[in-house]
Length: 90
Image (tube, rainbow, N blue to C red; front, side, top):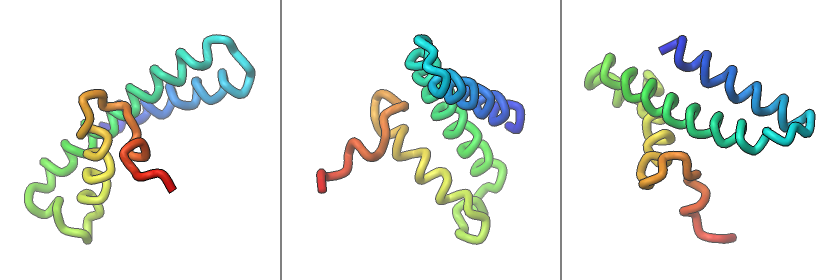
């Protein structure tokens, strides 16, 4: 799990550096980073919940909040959509 999170973090940092530098490939890198980080985050959170069993749903461990946050993005057919797109306009 740590390896996957490290890879996702590195990809996001690479995309951020490209965006800051004005690289024409930045949108491509950002899209890749967003998809990979979202999928990895959900996968790691789900495995952490499974490892903790029923205790993973207790608020003392904090895993239930992470899974709920990641689950919001997974409720769409496209897992990279943001939860914000489902919020009513202010």
